[in-house]
Image (cartoon, rainbow, N blue to C red; front, top):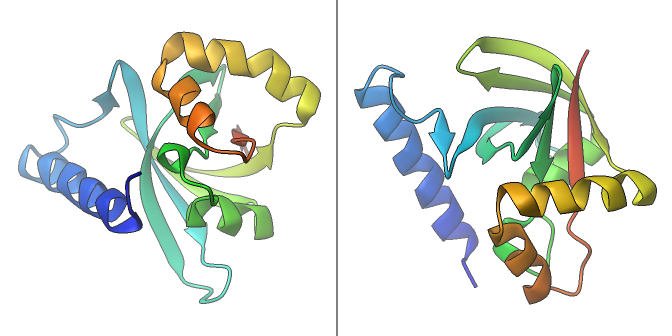
Amino acid sequence: MPSDHFFTTMNRMHRIVRGITFGKVGWTAANMPVLELTTTGRTSGEPRTVLLTAPITMGESLVVIASKGGHPTHPAWYLNLVRDPNVLVTTQGGTRRMLARVADDAERARLWPKVVAAARNYATYQEKTDRQIPIVVLEPA
């Protein structure tokens, strides 16, 4: 199971690639758009930024998955946005304020097959953990 250090290192490497290419490379991964999600740290109150993929887009809304590679605990970014759903999202098109919300059971049941169709690895992550992997919808503020 990947460690927090692994995810931090992968995010750092991705940012380096985007930086040295002046943003020309790194806005997609595994045929999905990449976004920077900035949350407010639930204990520090400081901005915390992570790179994520969005397997589904719905108009101006983006869907991200709190999988953490199938780890038994939720990712920190997810816990942060549950506490404060006001987030900043940067895509190749720019930065905007958005509101994050966790899909309820009915919406998750509708979206999960679409997520798995877009990226099979999410099904594998769900198989690795007993927790239900949350689906987060990022909507324009």
